[in-house]
Length: 71
Image 1 (tube, rainbow, N blue to C red):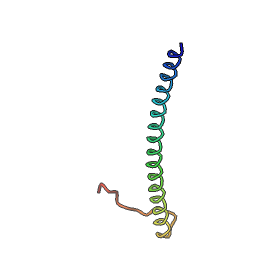
Image 2: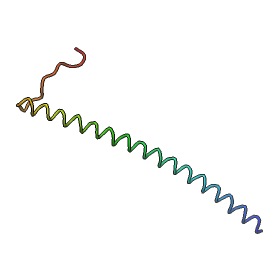
Image 3: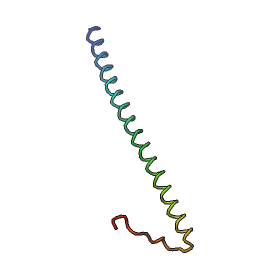
Image 4: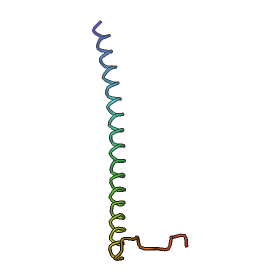
């Protein structure tokens, strides 16, 4: 009787340990992806600021005419 209860508790603990490891891995992957997306947003904000500065430097409200990179 007690051995059965102890075995059930050990099984439940092993399952919880496995679940905790799975959740930790998921959280780690999500944090890594969040870091990547934050870096991407920062780079895009920088490019947008540079584009705004080029427009301001050109002295008009129109975008600076550049030759597309495929020319």
